[in-house]
Length: 162
Image 1: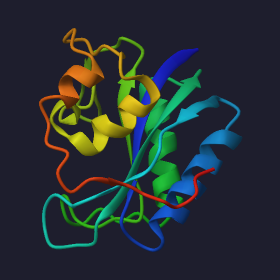
Image 2: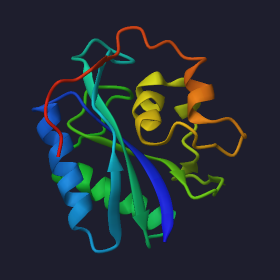
Image 3: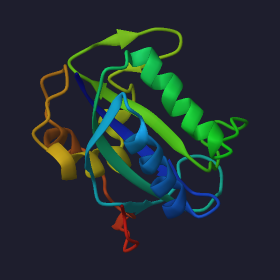
């Protein structure tokens, strides 16, 4: 079983409900074990004017390959009406593989670790809730990376999580 960390985000159509449904879909997949889920954070958007996001992270164990897991995550996004039209635009659901074991992968479809996670507090803060001492292939831990990011505008969300 591979140890995987993913990011979850939504800013449309009931973001907390979107995250709840995504986590429920993951937990019912026979090839995925949902190990831990972070707190949720309300974060300002990157890109065009749009509502704030609700972001979280989850730790999984899976027998799926990185590409098969990506397919599964994109299927869940599609089930929740994800439309890919505008880069960094609003979305019902965004599921990203952050880390997959100690694999370093760079293909046309998938880059692991996630290429921009080291500079994004909205990814690192929830990830630190689960495992702040997690080391990336660079040797730096999540907490070390987070120390170099601004958390301005990010607040814990008070909505219930699964």
